[in-house]
Length: 84
Image (tube, rainbow, N blue to C red; front, top):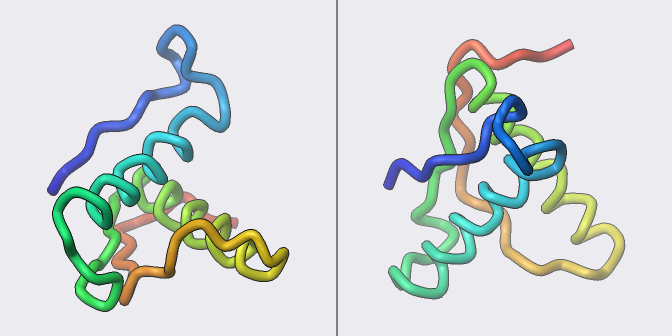
């Protein structure tokens, strides 16, 4: 599956729009396609890689706060992500 996400230069796409789009795609995969988290790998290149990392961090923080909404995927594959 190759979900699209809003880019920050688009109207109504300021942060955290792309993060919300990514999480929405994960919810769709889990609830509608019936895939188990251990069979899911999130992947992205450049800004998409950064988005994947942001999604993983969001899910980990939710788990730490006791408000876990989604399980973590099996892995993340980042292609030239924007990292510091």
